[in-house]
Length: 144
Length: 434
Ligand SMILES: [Zn+2]
Image (cartoon, rainbow over all chains, first blue to last red; front, side, top):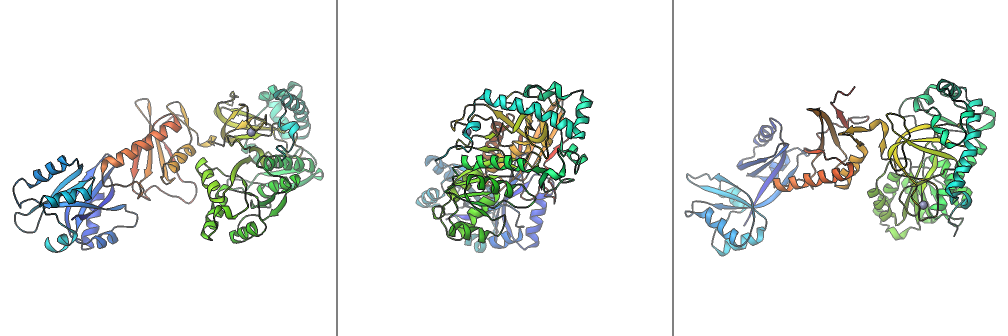
């Protein structure tokens, strides 16, 4: 299963990230995970949120927003989980575009988000290897 | 089918055309000198007399006329004959400053309409055709010019004027128009409206369109040709010289033949005024060789283009001009290369970006910097940085191949580049060159 990540285009000027986060906070959006990638001119804000529709509505119409399915795995099920996932992907020639981590609500819970080029293939292989991935309802319910 | 409206002139040899031009220019310069005190003054200031002009090679000795001269001489200062000999006035829209008012004798109108007739025949027009003219009628030259040309060819003419698209479509369908004359943007709009009303391109009887009076791109041509199921021809002209028909496209669609027996064209360096050889990019200058009412000599059009004498497969021998590549007012020289905002706009449209951009030119350590700010689009946006950088690079390469120099591309958020009511500030030149 995959979860939905939202990405937004941010200009690389001071305050744009702060403004975007303020907007979301004021709209009552709970940000579960966040990562920013940037170049000299612009940045891409990637977030996992409690409510996708509410988030999209809160951002102005002119903000470029994109939904992307990404894979999220829980890290402390067993040791070396990330390494295991990455070696499976490597063996299957699935490219990982980027990775970031976030923590869950329970003490010690950690999750990793992986953006891959072949999502369906990645999901099938992880299932075959009994590696559990999160879905959108996990994000809204289970991670409360 | 008749291929040319006036084959004897349209396919005359270079020497024959030169001879026509030489005979006309000697008479024309004397005519202007004797009848237009404003221009005689300019000639006297330059120390040129009609005796100095023996052939078109001597045209370069004559003073230029600019839009400023037209303003200063408004309304009668450049009139070439008594008003009682004139039968028509046409005028520009006058969006910037004072409008241009041009006078026509009956002979001028006939010449102008013949030029338009050549364009219609070049687009495949015969007396069997139904020509729908949806250029504006009235002071604007578009409607009257093509209307007159259509009459001369003997086509059934629909003087629709512009607007009321539903009625345009009804007439087009019911009366089976075969040639459409309008601005390219209106042609594109009619194409969209036809599709919205459920018509397919093959449902109409149109075979050709003659489009001009505003800048348009090759991409736009392809779009119009597809949506209307026609071949789209470009036409060029300006009120100062007569109107549309100064130059027109043939089936080769690789530039517009200038009606050289009536208009002598030069391309000059807009900064120095020096005449450039064929094949070089510069400002287009027209000398009308036989006009009576408004006989402008060496009129600077501000349009930048290139002339070519390459043999054309259509059999016409008259020199060809490219579509205007920009306006001389807008020309920037960056790292020694002439750059026009219109070229940048064409690349953006081709690559799928909105034509909303800003060019910033500066000079750092004695070398020019060249940056283009472009608004990012939903189609362009990706969550992966490398993808976006690849797109930036593709745009940079497309710019480099069009302009000859590569700008630095900066993607900015949508709707962040200022849109002003009037002309947008497209270029910010921070260099202190003057
Ligand atoms: Zn030709």
